[in-house]
Length: 413
Image (cartoon, rainbow, N blue to C red; front, side, top):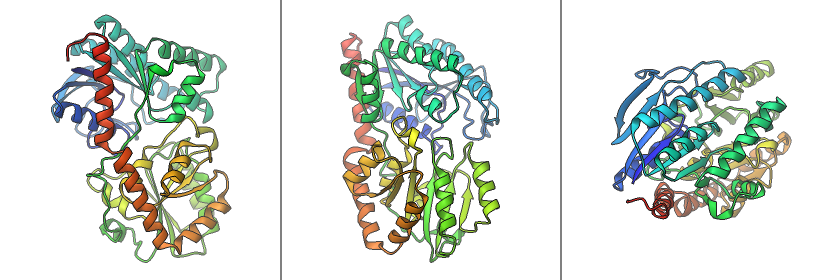
């Protein structure tokens, strides 16, 4: 197959969700397929082009035998509404000519968000008369409305119309969770049109390692119970709960919180820590892919947080990296969320409802004195990942889905 992926960010060395696209593309190439990725200049999360890259009108490079086509987009470090819309919009437009210049494909796959990228993918699929798969990583515009990014009624109506149009015209839709599938069924999308392929982690890269390591030592966490959050410090997270719990636990000197990542909430969170005079929280930027497994291993307990409104529109990829590292998970989420069901099914952690900081603090105090139970939770999570959410399992499912679509369309594989 000649496969064209269209995704806003593609950087194999990254630790964000972009690395999943890279892993899938690399796996499909190893299986004998030709893969082209149409993307922009890497700039997440700082809003600046990464060192060693440019923001070209059109550029072709090869990474791990994957052809990567980069096109121009508006890039700004500003986190406000209009710069973000311009970034998404300009890439969605230039991706069309990037795909056109890159040549034909047997199947086109576009990632959402950004939602408008689907329009470019649909046009290319019509021109080439090939199947088009819409890959939903988040549910838009619902996710943007829930966190307050999108408030204008006309804009909400516009993107809701676009969403329905894309669902109607996509050959197939791939979603990352059962809750996403149920959401689409409620919008009258045919069940035959939907495939659930979850997010994954590579168990050969993120793996169980000793807790006592150089990353932990550099942070001065020896003898501490380290509670870690690693990921986007964005609008869907309820990290205010974590700060409130840290304040309740400030007299427990052996408990320390480590928040790793970037996002629109980070300045306010850092300001809150300073204002409260909390000394039991450390902020760090995203860490490199090379030390990521060691970073994950350094925690006694990992946090996954989602605010109440984001329960059914988001599934954090950090969930699967925690499982891969064989560390226990403390999920601060609504009980009806996909994460909560997964944690309870596997016995790989504890669920605490969002907006309950006292309960969160109490659970951390309890788990601190249950090392054997934490070890069992970590092993349970690793076992679940290896059986259902490994990189190989999910790449197999994706290849099977794409091959079936091409066969149905009469394309030669």
